[in-house]
Amino acid sequence: MRENPNDTQLIYELDRTKTDAWDELRSVEEEMTDEDRNVVWTNGGNTHSLKYPVYSERINKATNLLYTVGAITPIYNWRSNGLPDHSPSKELSVADAIRAATYIVRSERFGDGAIARAAEIGLLDSILHSLIKWYDE
Image (cartoon, rainbow, N blue to C red; front, side, top):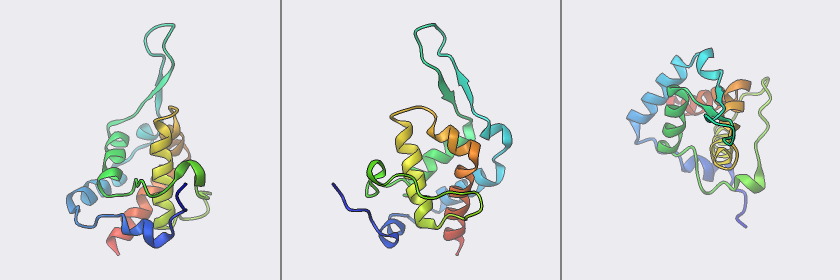
């Protein structure tokens, strides 16, 4: 089992050279709407299919861009270390934004709805805000 990386190790994973991706991520954050955050679930089309979330184009784009800029990283063992504290009254540090991004996107692969929940409770917005704030500084 891997050790839990420290903040510096996580931040080192971010790629500042991907300027176009960072600009796109900023646009996605600025243009995110309540409609984007209100994820629709479909029944899959027949009685044997499970429901699954249908994400907006902006949420899908945000997810892809998080990979591109390095915010979703294999060095964070999300299964063992979990989701960082993300209370609405607390701004995420950039390292916790990376932890949270990795956790929600990777866990989505094992059970639909992690990204939907993050969008619903404002965690996705907090992740984007913290990362873009870091990039701009």
